[in-house]
Image 1 (cartoon, rainbow, N blue to C red):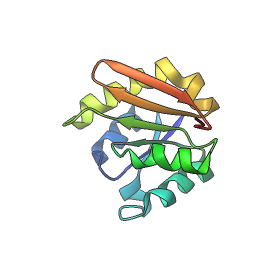
Image 2 (cartoon, rainbow, N blue to C red; image 1 turned 135 degrees about the horizontal axis):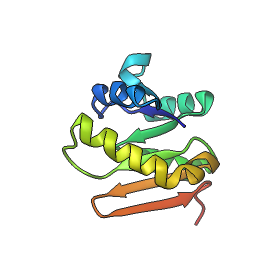
Image 3 (cartoon, helix red, strand yellow; image 1 turned 120 degrees about the vertical axis):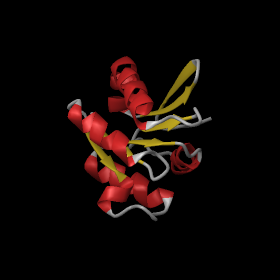
Image 4 (cartoon, rainbow, N blue to C red; image 1 turned 90 degrees about the horizontal axis):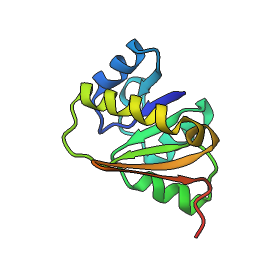
Length: 122
């Protein structure tokens, strides 16, 4: 599983995950620090990376475009520091890797994990 962390997440989380053998890039480290969400989604699609974000717009873009890739993990927990976020992402990857590999929109709350397969169609 390869990850691309959005701008709002700590850059140090990417380094922590790489040290745990999870291929992770941060948007700020690959020239996407000021990129529009659609450009980050496209980069994730091109590199077969799951996007990790705090931003609801990514799920909205997946729904509008009826995209089947990339998978997106939206974190809805405020104030996570790098270590706590890395630990959380490790647990999410273990729990939902099959869904993420198939294409999914995942929403993470303090006591809940919601997984919706792509494309997002009502």
